[in-house]
Image 1 (cartoon, one colour):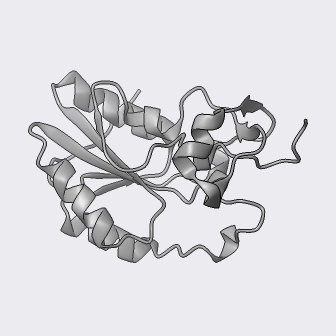
Image 2 (tube, helix red, strand yellow; image 1 turned 135 degrees about the vertical axis):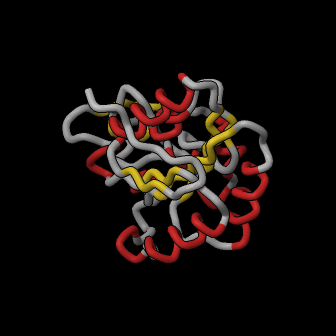
Length: 176
């Protein structure tokens, strides 16, 4: 296996979950911590602040993701209309000294076939509120590692959680 290429202080864009895992493992093997800031792109001042705070953590490699997660959208929300200004987002990441940007496709994160049912219970309704009511279990693409776990162990994580209640709300017809 060829060792992953990584240069401190330079922006690297990685789309493959397997490649991200290889790079993160190599960075940890030489004593680096990974700080992960998950986003859905369309970066703004709030994202910049998260990146700046993450950057202040000593001895860390700052990793951001730009992944428009289809599971974050309800039936009435338009996934196709969500902005995807990747060039602008990468420019912001470079400006904020992000060193790795993970940009997977949905097919990478949710392979066809396998599904897992998750029911967060009433805590999901409490955390998300009336605007994103969870009324039944959701169907989620199955992976041995979620996007957040690609850069997880001994890491710091800022920003929204990958498996937030909005990510696990009902996506299929409810089975009562």
